Image (cartoon, rainbow, N blue to C red; front, side, top):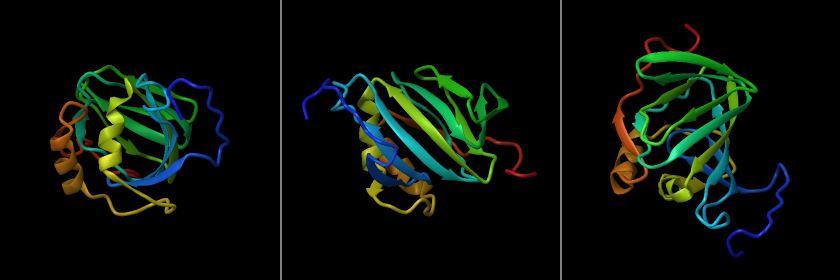
Length: 163
């Protein structure tokens, strides 16, 4: 499919990939399909999943919560966001999130779409909705894609989910 053609996908459609950071991604629109403008995927994650503190140089990241809740970390502060809420991290802004509900479903958008290369390298085709988090793999992949993501440190949250 060439870039910037009309695309229609049903809820069950999209490439399914297990992400080394935990969770099942369903790729809704790829960078190739949007002419590089953006990359969009659903992220199905289990409670307690955390991301390391990281940033995306030159890439803005928006997360819309379809189900569940997360705690986001920016500038040393945590903020809870529930279903129907949205978070936008400007390009280069250090951030992390932790799933605070039993599970969550997120719609993630990265602009421009070049960040997709990191997610492709850090994932495998899958139909499973959960798997072990592999922070060592994430760090190694991030080093190869340092123009798309920088891992800055471990998860920064002060307390564990549910406490």
